[in-house]
Length: 354
Image 1 (cartoon, one colour):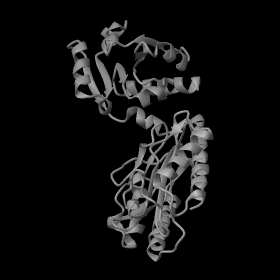
Image 2 (cartoon, helix red, strand yellow; image 1 turned 90 degrees about the horizontal axis):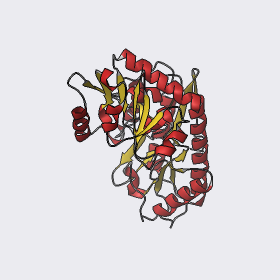
Image 3 (cartoon, helix red, strand yellow; image 1 turned 120 degrees about the vertical axis):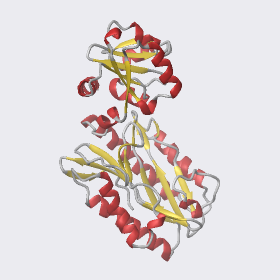
């Protein structure tokens, strides 16, 4: 990973130059990890042509040096005051910052440290755009997380029967992940049965699974910081014509979208493909969220596959395709898979049965 981190910082430096900035302040911990490997819970980076500095508190000085392979300087932060001690600080006239990751009070505290000639320049999505294209090491880690999620959801569904609770299913999944190589769960496991399944992000609770209920399970594994995300929906020991109609609609929408993936297609076009199938079947008002999202160090990251997205799909992107139909009082169906676009080919990374 040592070479990958340096390459990422070099890519950022080129963008800094293109934006006519003298330095860039990285405050998102996910982006800090992406650029240097640091996994602590407090820190920020200052990147310029001259300097690469990680600022953190006393708990993480040694860790920061080790995780960054001693390739960048690691200083005690003392808030943002540390940046004024840089030898090149007086040469910074344009300081870029991540506008979506700094609070108003932090903005004020940074402003007070700067001289009158130094301007704070807001930016959005600079590093996130770099992160949207995965390198080989990232792809391998995400594939491992996807494979483990596949195994976990199959294991859980084998144990599902009337009388089991949503919480029991969630715990079964999380226990399996931890026992089989996951560092953590990617997010709180979603298990929704019966009418609860009409809520896309229902939290697993004490509701008991009944025969004939729809059951939605949405879960993921995290391995070395990289995440997976998969959703499967089943009907529990029963038959239901409405379930069949809704399920077939969602599956058709998902496959139509997956078959439309190619480099250069916009994310909003892909969303429209799936949305049209659902609308044509009469369930348009019941598809209440975007089609998908990128996944990597964060569970939701670029590219966002939503109606408003102008992002064009590129080689190296990994994202979900997860249409859903949700009918209040009855339940819902969502089917989610992770897709890798690589060398003009589409690979479905999550392979458990649908």
